[in-house]
Image 1 (tube, rainbow, N blue to C red):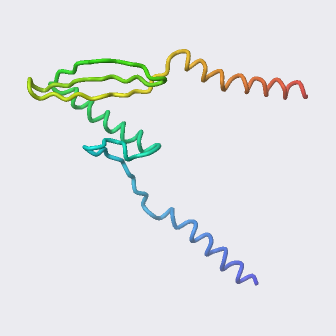
Image 2 (tube, rainbow, N blue to C red; image 1 turned 180 degrees about the horizontal axis):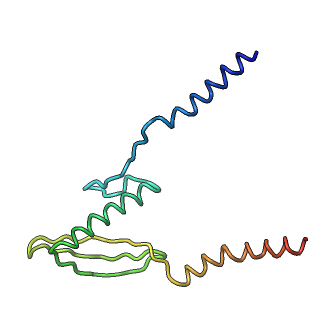
Image 3 (cartoon, helix red, strand yellow; image 1 turned 90 degrees about the vertical axis):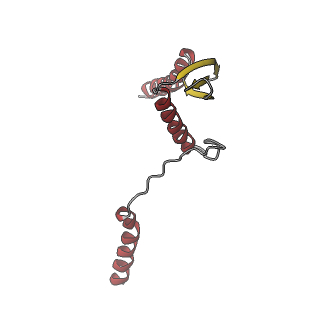
Length: 128
């Protein structure tokens, strides 16, 4: 009986610890020319978008002229429509979306956390 227990325990540990020896692959989603980051969902979408922004920041830092066409706020996001021109005939128009909550939205988010915590603290304090 002891032998069976030790056998199953070592098998269980060996199977659970085998993932520590494997090399973890890092997957960085890259945007596709036709659809951009549309095929990714959740966190991968944000990573793909960060890659796009990093690439455009490199392009913007080159000898190109960047023109801000419009800037609109959509909830917690700011959408900027930009045109980048390397020459008179070679231009590209794109949208840049950045997360930037307004002051009121930041205060509201803080209060959503602080008020219930304060109420729980008061109730615990009164019960003692």
